[in-house]
Image (tube, rainbow, N blue to C red; front, side, top):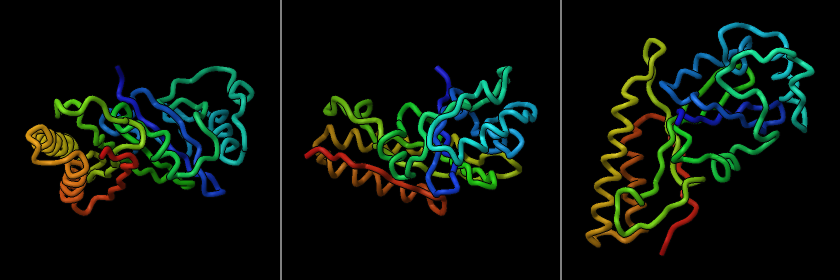
Length: 208
């Protein structure tokens, strides 16, 4: 199954290159694995991949990795990009799957990495009255606290969010909330739970 994540590398032009990691969401370890020497993770520096990563950030098209690295070193992030030169908002709206991508990372030009947990607002598993909900562009991303290079309260935060969804789903099935009201209440709870953490919410489609 994996612990899938998307990684957005900022470009000098202000846009982003988007990459995929199959296990990158596990314990949010990519926050410390992505460095200038190991731009896609991995246990050791690889000059070819460093050059490849640098050239990707200024290219308008994907590049042939084999021209930079004849071998295939193990990395946590797939070096070949999913997208080249995409706006940040477009990623959140059209490419981030808030159910199947468990984490989202933003890598700045100086390799400062921000790790976000994804929060899917879909209620189809919490409310019998909801048949299906979109997964792409339908949720929020939230940072977590770090202490001594470890995420603090990550599991608690996920459980807290799931508890809010369970309550909202129950209220929806009892006709206490309309669908729109249920989403509004869930957003309110997410804001409360986030506290001082950075939170970005995207809910473009709302049922009547």
